[in-house]
Image (tube, rainbow, N blue to C red; front, top):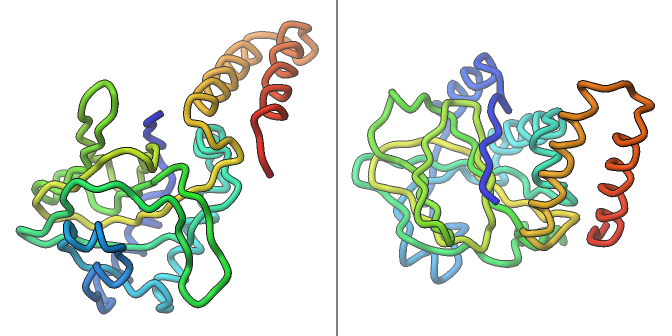
Length: 224
């Protein structure tokens, strides 16, 4: 399932982050790449243990926790501390697949990457190229969202970033529900329950039954 999550960051948050990022020192993006990704990757990255990355990453994690749509779609168990990258003219990230297990260097933190996320930090009109292109069974999908918006997609997907300029945050999520198809069913059921309950009273029996089905499926499929 691929889904856009609008408004994760407010415009003033994006502006403050961009000011900090524009003043930061950037390094070769391959410092955090695996062997396969290093062959495809040409960009720059913020040092992941630097004070700017830690501070801005913490702010993003707080914002994710306040997004009902992100929580409903991802059912997050663990979120990798957000990283930051930027692409200049001619830089790109060719087709690749994300590592199944992500480990934070120097710590015992690790997660299974069920979902990948890109949080856009520049208005699409302000740069050329830089689209995230995700491949799935229905074809290819080019994504270039407004600043502050996020896209979630299965980490198992082949994807690439087209040549151009872009600045973004990216990270991975281990979901309580490993299987993408099961997560999709739960998300669609949750969305339906929310829509039905908005038009009916809180003690409506049908809403209660649907809510019970959602939680019983989550008990069956969930891991925590």
